[in-house]
Length: 307
Length: 248
Ligand SMILES: Nc1ncnc2c1ncn2[C@@H]1O[C@H](COP(=O)(O)OP(=O)(O)O)[C@@H](O)[C@H]1O
Ligand SMILES: [Mg+2]
Image 1 (tube, each protein chain N blue to C red):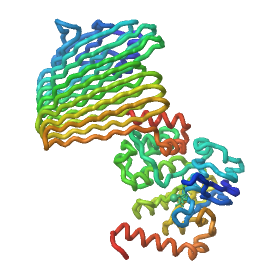
Image 2: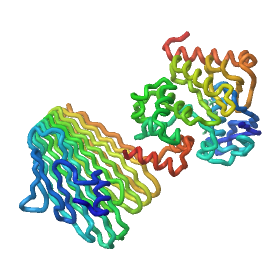
Image 3: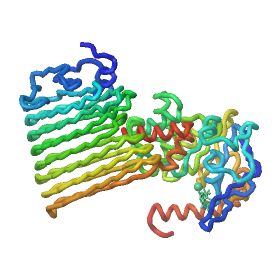
Image 4: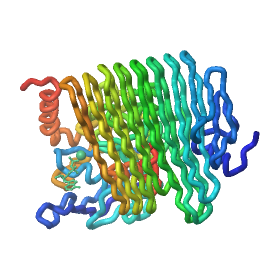
C-alpha cells in the first residue's frame, strides 16, 4: 500500500514511518481504519460499543512493536476514539502512537484520544506519542488526549509525549496508578509559538510499596503562546517520586508550572524542581564564539533542550 | 597580526556610574609566537580576552586583525575571521552533547577530527562524545571539553583562559605539548594563554603582566620572572592549601 504525500509526511513526522511497518499496526485516518493488522502475539480488534480499538499483547511477548498513528486531514472533522491497551505479564513492547493533523480550511479540526493502559506485572512498555499539526488554513488544529495508566507490580513503563509544532490548542490529561515495585517515567516535550495554547495535567498516584515515578517535563514557549503545566505526585506508601519541570520562555509567552506533592505515608520520598527562565546569555555567547549567528545559537539551544 | 590600540573597557557599577576595567591597552601579537597573559586575580585578563572576542564592547580604542579593523564586529563575525576563545568558566547546556559542540566548533562533521580533539585533551572519545555538556560533568572535564573546541576550530588567534584550572598535571603536560606543536613557529596562527602555571609560562615567547587593567610588564620569561615570582609562589601556596586541606 502506498500513502499519498500528505499522509506520508504526517506519518513520517509523528511515527518515523515511510511504509507500513512490521508487526501489529493500526492506522486511523479521518475517523476510519486505513490499515489494521494484528501479529501473532499482538491482537488488535475494534471496540464493539464505541469507536476505537483494543490492543492485546500476549504475556511474554518480547521485543515487538505496535504502531497506532492517527491522521486527520478532513476539514472540520472532530475525531473521538477510545483505545485500550492490555500488556500481558512479562511482555516487553514498544508502542508508537501519535497524531498528525493537516488542515487547509477555516474550520477547526481535532482529535480526542482516550487511552487506557493496563500493564500487567513484570511487563515493560515504552510508549511514544508525537503530536504535530500542518497546513495553512485558518482552522485550528486541536488535540485533547486523555491517558489512564495502571502499572502492575514490578512492571516498568516509560511514556514519552512530544508536541513540537503546529498544534494550536491542546489539553492533555494523564492519570497513572503505580503498584508495588513498579516504575513509571513520563517525559514531556512541548514547544508552543504564535498564539498557541497548551495545558498538561499529570497526576500520578504511587499506591504500592517500593513503587517509583518520575515526571520530566521540558518546554519552550515563544511569541504570544500560553502554557500551563500541572504535575501532581501522590505517595500513598513507601515510595519515591520526582517531578522536574524546566521551561525556556521567550517573546511574550506566559508559562505556568504547578508541581504538587502529596505524601500519605512517612516513608514516601517526593521531590520536585521547577524552573522557568530565558536562555542564558552566556550560552548564546559561547555558541556565537564558535561561529553561529545569534538566531542559530537560539535554535541550537532549543533543539537540544527539547531533545 | 592582532593589534590593540588604546583599548579601554568599562562596566556599569552598582552606583549607576562607570567603572574602568581596562585602561588604554596597546598590544600587538605576531604570528608564530606563543603569548602568556598573567597577573593577579581581577587584573583584567578575562576582560581583555572578551574584548578581543567581541563579548565586551570597548569604551575607547580600536582592534585590528591583519590590519583590518574588527572593533565593530559581532562575536560570530569575529569567530569567522579566525578568533577563538576558550572560556575561563564555560557555560553548561541542557541537552547539547560534547559531540554537538565539537561539530559546531569544527563547522563540519569530521568524526575522526572530533575524536582527535578529545584525545588531545586527555579524554576518551567513546566515553565523552554522547554526554551532555551539563551538570553531569566535573569542572575539570568542562575545561578540557572547552579547550578541545578551541583546538578544533583551528583558528588564527586562539585564546585559552586559564586552561590549567581544575586540570591534572599530566593533562597540562600533554596540552603544553600540543600547543607547542600546533602554534610555536607556525606562521599562520597565534596562541594567547592566560595562565599562572609555571610549566606553561616558560614555553611562551612573550609574557604580558596585567594588573588593575594596565600592562605592568612585558617581556620574555627570563625578563619577567623576577617580577611575577612572588605572585606565582603565593598562588601556589593557596592552591596547595585548597588541594590538600591543610595550612602550610
Ligand atoms: N561584566 C562585569 N561586570 C562588572 N565587573 C566586571 C565584569 N567583568 C569583569 N569585571 C571586573 O573587572 C575586573 C577584572 O576582572 P577579570 O577580567 O575577570 O580579571 P582576571 O581575569 O584578571 O581575574 C574585576 O574587578 C571584575 O570584578
Ligand atoms: Mg579571569
